[in-house]
Image (cartoon, rainbow, N blue to C red; front, side, top):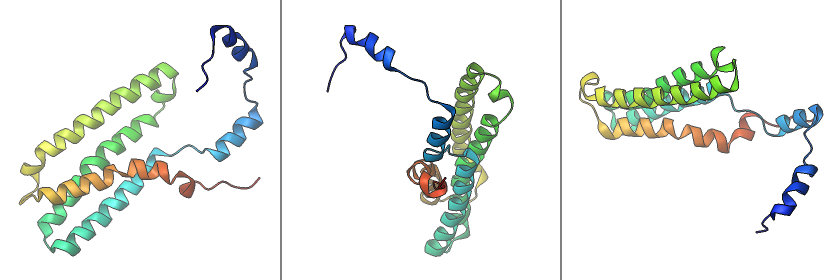
Length: 158
């Protein structure tokens, strides 16, 4: 690994060139932004698929409700978070956007934890394995969405 010496830092700063509008447009085509609403939609679909899988494996309605509740413990806070990120307040300035991101991320985590604590009271005959399966499957959508971003947003030829 090559380290930049202090005398070389001036040369590095001198060689930096900002991107042109065309270069930025090309970069956005190759590296598209991932829509938070698309991620929430995929979470919803996988939550439904997980509920169907739990029904197929166990045949118990209470296990299906548990899996759905586990998925909802991820989907509802994620939808609230997505709504906050796409609001007009979040786009006022960079400082407000960063503050809003961290604030709503904490709200999302808190709401998820609150829903998990409330699960035994809200879901009769709660199946913890089914609920955790629904929770984990929908939570892992974030990583799947990042890995398959090019599948969701293919590069269009110019």
